[in-house]
Amino acid sequence: MAHTKYTNPELLSVTDIVNNLIIRNETIASDEFWLSLFSLRRVLEYHIENIINNWVASEEISKNKYGSYGNIISWKGGDMFKTVFIEYLNMKGLYGNENYFGINSEIYLRLAFDKMKPSKLIEKREEFTKKVCQKLRIYDREILDKFSVNCYLGIVSGNTSSSRVFPRFEVNIHTEKEYPDLLDSCIKLVSDYYFSKNRLELNKVLYKDLNEVKYSFLRKNKNQIPEEFLKNIVEKLEIIAGSSKETLDDLVIGEVKVTRDSIENTLYQVFCDYIKLVEDGNYESFLDLLESTSSKKTIDRSKLIKYEVVECPCCNSLAELCLNK
Image (tube, rainbow, N blue to C red; front, side, top):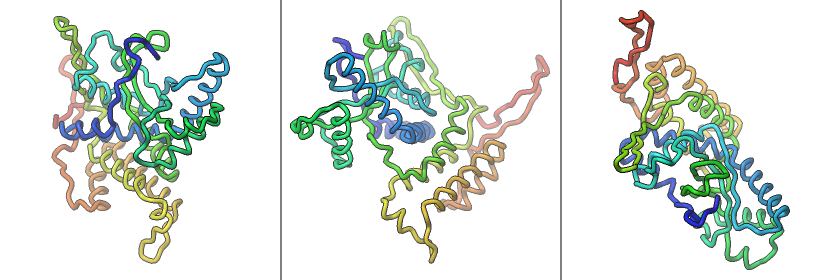
């Protein structure tokens, strides 16, 4: 992935991307972006282990030492990450060349020795750096003192043989999933359901005179569900992910000790109920359920998606007509 013109990738911030989406009132895309990252974090350890093993093997074969190593990866929700990331890059003027691959770009995960020390989770990052150094047979104490192994998630056009002629764009992510294991089953359930349909696409317009491409979000009405669905789920995931170990271990409601298993089972069942109602198109009952379990007394129903089955005047075939575009 190295090239003299594009040696260093363009580094961006997950927080900046999400804040920008919210400012532009793209709150659904913001929640979709978060869910895609939650979905990645669930399988992050697997991908990182693969990178480390490939890194070790590559150094043994080549007899060279590398400061970073990455793999092309995929996961449930990866296309959503790519879609939101590309739109943001294009909006910032960083991704407008007509030769870029757009949604056909590859996603990669990269580990790298950096002098950029972490500002949070310092002990965990130090332990992770020691682990990588042990695998790579690096025993120089000076490296451990001056460097930290960081993790980057990025996109690049082309494949392994042609990607070196394109720039890379990355965001820095944690090397651990940073949420309790009890969320694994819930995140898998929601990710498998939500990302099973193409809910967000990129509309591409080519300005030939300028040799530029402009991307914008495009949604297919038939695959949309109330925005409260994902908003409510992501909020619940973030609350538990942000809770300390002590909070989860000592949680008591009334006089009843709440175990991690009971939290997992309850949350899983709630998400199953959400999915069942929206999949059946029973949106009114879904919002009733939200109102009964939310601190928010009333939920705006003005954007509730409503369809009517109509007959095409040309061919007499049946189709769904969205009544509230």
